[in-house]
Length: 102
Image (cartoon, rainbow, N blue to C red; front, side):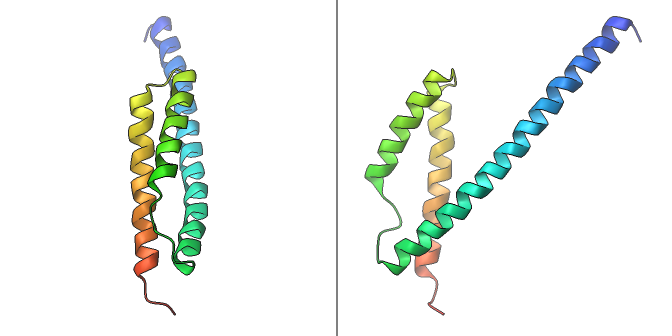
């Protein structure tokens, strides 16, 4: 193995370790986000509020598209990612609403 190849492997390992750390942080952040949205879903269900709030979703999407642009992240990717999360949250809220009361 050449010295250059060995250096590249160490560099690649370092990059991959950083990616692994970021992935772990993303999972933890999503878990925390869903804990809060679970509480929101329960609140909405007990107060007879609709599972979705299209006006808030649009405001959030616009705000996060701007943040993505400022962060040099493709705003379309940011919107697709957030839309996926929002759709999952709405699904959870619908499920909470439709669960029989204990």
